Image (spheres, rainbow, N blue to C red):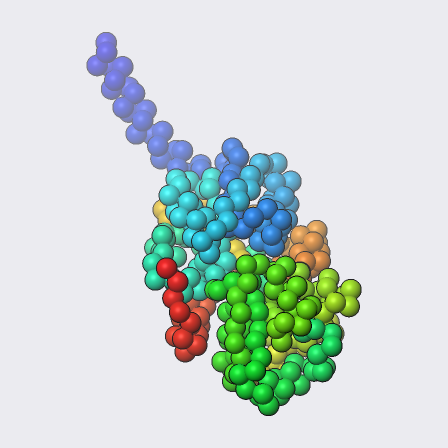
Length: 326
């Protein structure tokens, strides 16, 4: 009798596993989904990610829990994501730094962007703004570049830390415009902008969402944005390309990855639901207010972006002699 029962259970098991796997994408999500974000609560990445997943939660009648794991240039969060079960119930926010800059910037990483994760899809592009003190005589970015070239090695610029989007955007500018300036790393945006307001640095490159409120209040003057084309939210702000640095673009993009081994049908479903959310007016308008532009596409599109950006920033870090971090 026990043998018969065991035989029945074994046979049932043979059919149960494929049935569950086949229906996993159709039933996803049937329990809370954790989304690991590599920034503190209230940061740009955190706020923008919440906008998307709040919309998905409403559409799917599901629960998405944001787990903030800042630190180590995003390596803490990425290391956590890669160790989770590849079942679609742990997603990870990842960006240009964690996926494309860090592999060339750090001597060692606790994760491999290409081997440990599967790209799900990009969510947005976010841009940085070059700003100066209102008393700076330069009225345009081109005038600022000329001023710097007339006084080599005299000026410095600031950004929020080594390897951040502002630093990388600044080094790309220094390389393409051939500017002889010194980079000053800060512990965060507030310190950077405080020194800029105090005229202790010549210019800074920081996220538009923190710079533009200071521009609107008259405390800073914005000269250029790092997008290739003008951003609808700031239609009067020229690009670097328009300012004489042809082809310049530095994008702080962000998207979602999952642990390697996550079933393809689940990845495709998450991607489809993300794209639906990103196409809604609610999400597009909420992101636009923060200076971000929504982006939709396939997992393959996201993988292609990651790879091309890895090459771009590897070459930049080598040519600019940026010291690798531990």
